[in-house]
Image (cartoon, one colour):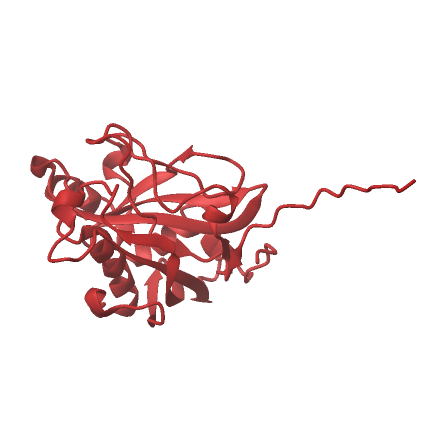
Length: 260
């Protein structure tokens, strides 16, 4: 008689530097957008703040992650009011589709009222989610960035607005324009930003293979794609953030959350 043993192998998500690939556990870097025409359109999650960033940057608080956003000239919504439908994303961390954590808008140099200008006149903005479920707890921040038109134009996305929106944020890090049309998966950048006594050093690496290079199924694709350039260029900007200066009463630890 032979004894047959069965082993249940644990599932492992594909790990990158500071995040897990959502697709390796049934997720996607394409959001679910309600009430689109035609139905079932998506928007790209095209920028990731690495879970290998310093731990205080990854805390979803005004002193942590939102202060880093402020250093990039982005703030919360105008008077905290959100209009429009909430998008969902499945980051492959075991939580399934979840609503965006918040929408963050370019503040035009005015952290208090500038996002009201963005809501009315248009500009850069993003939605974000945090990969922290039990199946893939990286702590990384996943951002769906796009540059939108004015409220009077229905907040449509400008030509090439998903790729440009991503790269405008990277340009805010570097202090110079990013050459969107010539980027590859070997493109790297770095820069320094500051807010409220914190100085942040950000290293950016562009990755391919996580998003499709396509216009098919992408929200607003008829107006976003142009001259044989797809609405989504297939690249994701991975940003690792380190705090180089803290205020005297600021956090004192580097990344200590055990993320891989």
